[in-house]
Length: 268
Ligand code: SAM
Image (cartoon, rainbow, N blue to C red; front, side, top):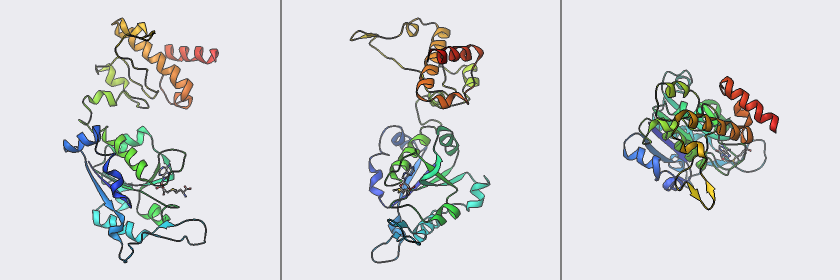
């Protein structure tokens, strides 16, 4: 995959993309990440990228011309081809007003050959970029940041780790929080005793088995795969009910799990 990030702060990305899986994926040639300085696409002495809003109001707005010019230079396919799925490319505008970025979006973007991420600043971006240049607006959460750079780094990391070969064991990214559709893979013999299948991940423990009086749960020490699977699934259900009950609605549960969940709800 090739990812292009458009920003007025290109140096911002020096750190976040140079560590861990994102760095390794680049070294392995699985991902190429290019950073583009929006000011390179201006034509005035001051390299102006923003202007006052029509209609008045607070702050400044990123102008459309440098953004359209930058995208022209990248040789990205026309918006209608991207939207119709005729090409595996996506242009994402980072925006607090966007659809909420989820693991499902990450999985979808990981299928793309190219992805462009446009980072807004100031009061935002001229709406013609939303309507005629980007094919989607994504938000990383219901809060307002000062720019799209951190959200872009979040999206890159979430997407890159899903590229086949990016993490040591591909099965591990299919069994994490929020990931659906792992049931069949587990039945086919993926080397784990539990997938999240839309729930939050189950709790993890490592050595030492005893630490300052805190013991690792016994079920995990039995070596009994079925018992471990059931224990993990129940803990995942408990945690999901406690922290993210909204996720339970879309999550396929067995009869035994539904009964367990009903029991938990009654205890609440
Ligand atoms: N006036 C905008 C609003 O109220 O929705 C906020 C603009 S914000 C100060 C500047 C830029 O930060 C946005 O254009 C966007 O690129 C980025 N940004 C801020 N919050 C974000 C979020 N939750 N998700 C993605 N991008 C965000």
